[in-house]
Image (cartoon, rainbow, N blue to C red; front, side, top):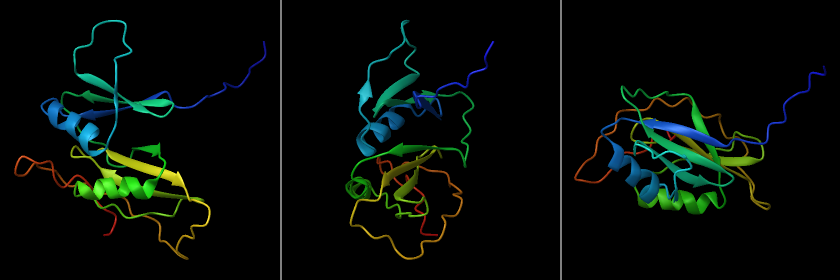
Length: 163
């Protein structure tokens, strides 16, 4: 019997957790602020409504209500995106101002932390003709702070990397 190596084709989906009492806030954040497009449940059985799905290129992003939720600070989702500067402008309109990071060779990226301390990276190859700064220091590890809704609006979503 020959031991062949598996052929990985890509990531099918990534699941992020949120506290069980934050369902509506999480849906608003992922759909209205970040712009993810919901997709129908692929489950053959009727779901409980505690898990929902978003389109993410060839993959999916799943968000689930998790009892006794605790964020993991360092692990993160890295999402390939087109037009990172335009996306950054979208985030700015929602009070999120992440700094561009050039530390991943040939790419530029931003990091945000959602209101439940899930870290998300958005990354794109640097466009032809764009010259990154000479020296961009490596990004420090993020230490999220608790988030609270203020005035009925979700605010303080991100931890910009501007120190």
